[in-house]
Image (cartoon, rainbow, N blue to C red):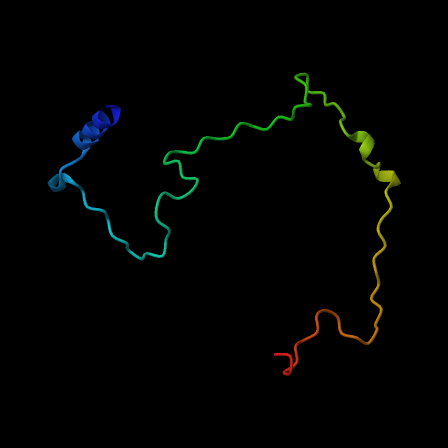
Length: 100
């Protein structure tokens, strides 16, 4: 019963062939079809200024994570590695004709 009513309703919703709009064909432009991602079509709104959660209204910051950082006067500079000539070339070896 319900399926008969549903079919009749679907037939009534159909558009006659003479009123149908033909589909556009494929045109190779080199660009992808459809709306470009991220386009909103209007003027972009300015993002609100980022305010960290730990920033209090009075302007005083809480020092979160300070116990995880090393103070500047205790930091030790990394020693720069010096070049030691071994006689072997640096980097990946070039392919020979036999390997290609």
